Amino acid sequence: MQSVLSVLYPPKCISCDAPTETDFALCGACWRETPFIEGHVCDLCGDPLPGEADGHEDYCDACLATQRPWSRGRAALLYKGNARRLVLALKHGDRPELARASAPWLARAATPLLLADTLIVPVPIHWSRRLKRRYNQSAELGRALARTLCLDHQPDALCRHKRTRPHEGMDAETRFANMQNAVLAHPKHGKVLAGRNVLVLDDVMTSGATFDAATHACLDAGAKSVQVLALARVARDA
Image 1 (spheres, one colour):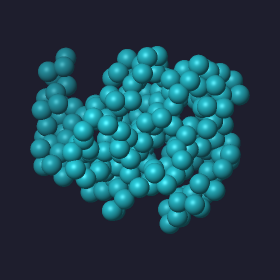
Image 2 (cartoon, one colour):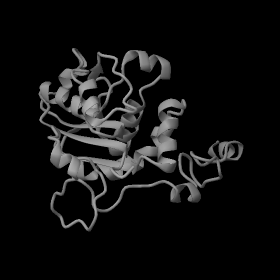
Image 3 (tube, one colour):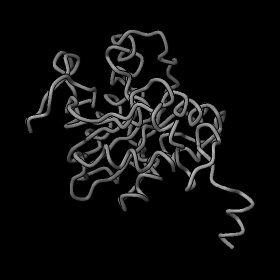
Image 4 (cartoon, rainbow, N blue to C red):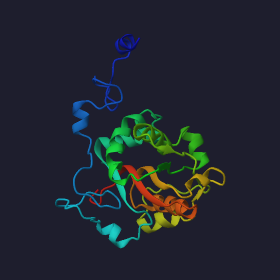
């Protein structure tokens, strides 16, 4: 049956539809055009840093200037080029299957963050946006990553009870103000956060304002520790 299906529906690149050897993969050309984050990075946000890693924790200027409530952070991609197109397709293009393709990339980025009994918790979206998109892209990423890493996943541990304004065009200070008290532990499902090492997951990190709100909600609900992971990171020189 699988061979018949592969003939009828041959694997295609998730980005350009060129033939690939496996499903949910990038072709060679698109892989080369996708900016994966590697090497020396900020230990709090995953932003690439100059020089070589020496085994010690290093931080970018933004994380040195802004107190982060989470312990460590990483991202899989730089939010530009083909990575930006993939994220936008997942978020606004009705392509939830891209979460499955992203899972191995997220798993590799998440490796330094994983602790015993890690619980994956996606950043929530407001019910009105979920109604429009039909799904929460971060929850789709969380489900795929949990399956890849064999970890627990609680897609509704947090809730976004306030419809915030889109962050496009805002400076960092305005973004943080916009997210003030916007995310809370779910009154019923948020109880799972107590005593857990939580990995908060979102599609994009820019200033960190959304992660800040989600982390505070987890800690207020009794989380033991919080790490953050983004599919894509807006680089400081972007």
